[in-house]
Amino acid sequence: MTAAGWTVSDDVVWAGEDTVRIYQLTTGQFQSLNGTGSSIWCLMAGGKETEQIAQELTNQLAGGDPAAYLEILSDVQGFLLSLARQNMVVANPGEKTDERRGRGNRTDEVVSRGAGAGRQ
Amino acid sequence: MHIADQIDDLTVPDDIVLFRTATRRLAMNSHLASWTTLTPEQDDLLCGLARGVRPTADGAGPFRSKRELDRALAHLVLNYLVYLPGWQPGEVAPKIRLNVVYYAITDGCNLRCPYCYDSSLRKLPGELKHEESLRLMEQIAETEAATVVFTGGEPMMRRDLFDVVRRARDLGLKTNIITNGTYIRNSEIAATMAELFDRITVSVDGGTLERHEATRGKGTFAKVVRGLTLLNEAGVAPVINHVVTSDNVDHMHEVAALGERFRIKHIRVQQHSDLGRGKDDHLTFEWDDYLKTDSFMWTEPNAKYLIDDSVKAVKPCAIKGNCGMGGNEIYVNSLGSVYPCKLVTGVGELAGNLRDAPLAELLRAPNMTELRESTVYGGSVHTDCSRCYIKGACGGGCRAFHMARSGDLRKNSRALCRILRHSQISTIWRALGADRALIEDPGAFVPIRPVDGSVHPVYEDWRGEQAMKTVEPTPSQRRLPIVAVSA
Image (cartoon, rainbow over all chains, first blue to last red; front, side):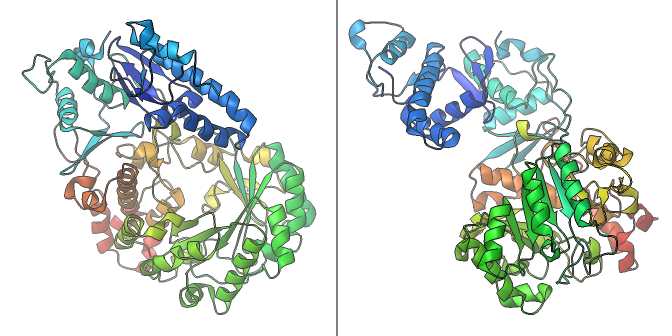
């Protein structure tokens, strides 16, 4: 299941708009995002859900083209899941998690959720 | 390695300043145009680091754990307020690529605006002929510039204007026009303009007949209203250019209301300057006038239509180092003379004439090279900017506006710097969602140096210039270099 909404991890400090710069408190690692990644990050950090982010990018990049939306949504979902795998973002409270699998690693839960429902 | 593990080797650059109000704190790195808000704990940490004090994470101070200290340090590092060991910002070089060519296709004008920077009157003898103008468009296209802005005088007075514009468009150039709007007489003309121009800018001096015609002349308000109406009917949302002066600054609400009356992109508010005929009109734009415009931007709902000349709340990726004259934009006058900027047309700033040399060669003229390569980080034009705490965002301001006040393109007007600095901080506070009460806090605009808590030395450098002005014996000497006035 792909989470509809994400939040910046409490283990992350970040800054920037056009180029988002990230520091992970757990590892001491710095990373920066490219322009598109930064756009997605800022929209996510501003409280937008995955579909809203995809729609906003579709409007900006493809004039709102519905076909492009599906492709962009898939890319946005993939990008946010990759951030989740790196413990940079977490699913919003209340998002459904696959507790039945009993996985202890929170990242794995997020990733596993991303493999299933929520696809357009 | 965590930042907290490197704390002994972290450095605080000299360019940092802090602005402290009762409720919020703002920090800026002037070199990189980076800014962010700080908590009191982050502020204390920054000042401590600047003074060589290294906090512990043992709970004795504000940080109960290494993680808390690391988080606070990360905020400072990520916003370029503290540098990691061995890290210094690279050289900031302007991105020099010709983008915009302003072409005064004629000096003839049907209006006699008292502050006209071009001092436009009648068509000058020796104006580039039709074929020469077409050839200019070809040369501009060969430079790979993106846009030609047709200006004047009044460009609509040139009978072959539309043919020259068509040629520019055929060559792939974007085409804009700056017009007084009085020649947009009917729907056919408006439709042609809609077809030919990517952007149409119409100059409006007031939102009422009385205000507009005080500078533009009798009968002009009805004509410009007709022009704006016809453009709207043709599907064009024009830009409105408005020169704000000591005489009309109290009536900005009338101009802003044009945003409700017409469909426009925005209203660009430019401050009056002593350029061209502006040297001899009675109009000014000084600190008190600026404060009125700043207040207007904070308080008036219709200010949403306005874009003023203030320094924008830029971030590091946007810094350019200079205004772009002679590099990103140039000016070609009606006679084919090439200058670095439409406002910088003194004899010493002439690159040459298109009748003597091709445009590509004139772009390489020594004065053009000097101007485009000088930045607030080094260069002969911006030496006065070297110590300023907004230099990265400001890029030195409009050099022509400095020149109009200081008498020298390469010398800053400290009165203008004062306006630029206030507007920069005001814009940042606005971008941070601050309210009116915050900017009325005395500390909101006072730059404090973290290294010793002192006020940044350039904050009040305008006072020295004002002191010199008070001994100015005659108005004519306002145009002389300040050094001469003070001598």
